[in-house]
Image 1 (cartoon, rainbow, N blue to C red):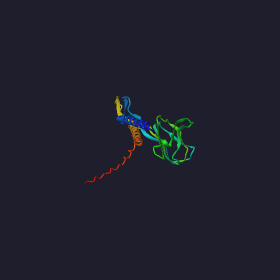
Image 2 (cartoon, rainbow, N blue to C red):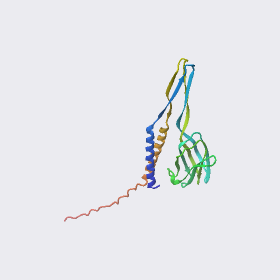
Image 3 (cartoon, rainbow, N blue to C red):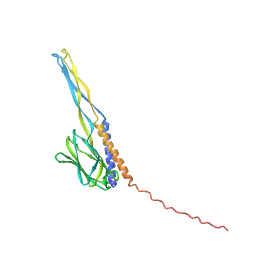
Image 4 (cartoon, helix red, strand yellow):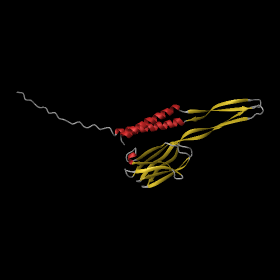
Length: 245
């Protein structure tokens, strides 16, 4: 990795932190719902209102630990996505049998359509003599069944193979019931908090964490290019003795 890569990684970290900070300014948002209920004086009874709100959560459709991979074979892992996943991250951690290795990782659909793929080598690892990789899938993963395929040209023990992202879930708000008498004839407007949205907070936290990680990695890599000070030559000064007459 050269100096241009380190500069690009630093800029990426600053951009991620800036975007995350801007999103964090929105913070947690409260969703306010309003309903109009009209009660006629010809009858008495009850009116019910209900609502559905959407909340964000961290989804982990694939989490594989402590497996062994044979060399020059494709290992497949199936997983299902129930709700659309955004900002998915793919992590691969393990120990190869050889210090120099190369591999391919990809996500395909049930019918074999390639959704995402990446190739990597030992030079891309964040840790020396280890498999330490991470990728960000910038598109959404819609609901469905998928396969994650992993290929290595050497055998390895995989400590963690994980897909994680931000998903959403719909929550049914319990109904609000009003009982009226036959003599009433008015229209009521009811305002109430029907949901709390943590989407911006979660996305901001993820982006800022990735930005800090990118800057830490660039700093560690930059230290490798700092020249070591050369030792100063040691000189001995001899004193000449003068004889006095």
